[in-house]
Image 1 (cartoon, rainbow, N blue to C red):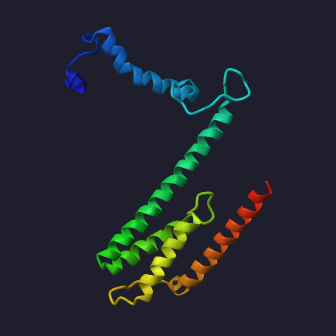
Image 2 (image 1 turned 45 degrees about the vertical axis):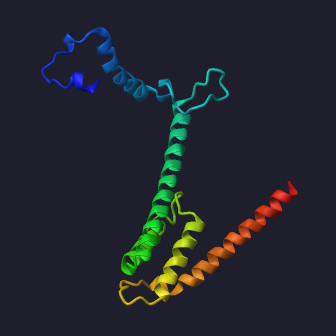
Image 3 (image 1 turned 135 degrees about the horizontal axis):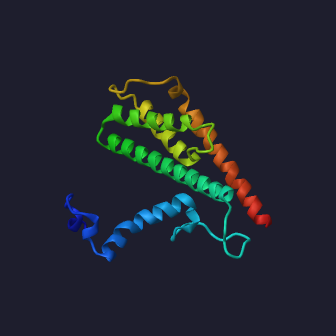
Length: 178
């Protein structure tokens, strides 16, 4: 279909009405979305108290902001998981420096987002800290670029595990009483 429109010299008036309508349809949808995103078909907004499902622009902005925030949180999860996986592959290949660098990169990622609403989940943190501690304690000669934090990795793992256990216990008690 796209090949039909590859000629730069072809005038818009040479197309039939159906073709022009098909070409302009995405532009119309974009215009509608810019004016009021709720007018676009296939949106992710649900009706509110109003029977027609109209949403104010303030409410719409709030919903779009929350969706964007959730998308960023999920993207950070995927990034951390991928980096941990790559570090594991480096360990399998006995590329100790690359593995340590990747684990340090993951730690840097979550430290950048410590005070944000966006953060790294506790279990991937434990995974990173535990694997980096194992790697550094094995004392591979080729690992350089250690940080001051590296000496306290085991205590961070224990602290995180205690936190996770406390949360699990709290959830067990809370759900048992409901």
